Image (cartoon, one colour):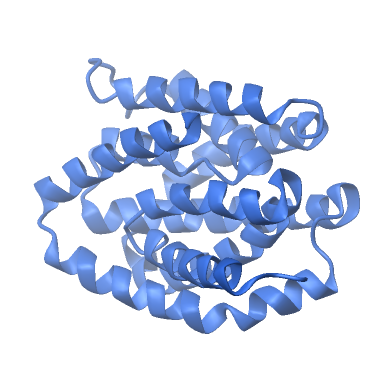
Length: 239
């Protein structure tokens, strides 16, 4: 791919970060998005990152699967699928700058859910909206982590249930996205697949580090950590 040594180092760190993000340190996932976009280009990077995310998703599901709230995932999936389909269509239509502004506004709105007194558990309309936004944002930029994190935290999920539910949700939507990347966007092909496979040991290492760190963080500080990472990742997107 004609990558420099420095770019390869950044990619290796991104793979470790993806593994850590999928086992509970989600803020790191948002740092990876602009780094890979800068190396490979905004559109091309989405296919490369998607395969890395799926590998990390499998580990997250394997470790936290028994804690997941599957009923909530089923409730979110129909609108998430609609969001993915719309994202496929307009993914090439919107400029990078406009997408960053839109994404930042959505993430900030999601963060405000933690301060607004909404009965998130019983609000079906909110579930439909969040599912749609999650599907749309993850299709266009692999960047739905923050808004889904805020939503799951607003549900009152404790640490392990939060991680397990997010892992299952993103495994499902990321697998659904693969055919669209192959057939329509042409951002995934054999060379990309083989390149990502070589990064699997780094993803595994990151996942193990993430599990170890999350175990050390108590419930309340963990929620504060997640919310803080959401705001920091939003600032990063605007920059």
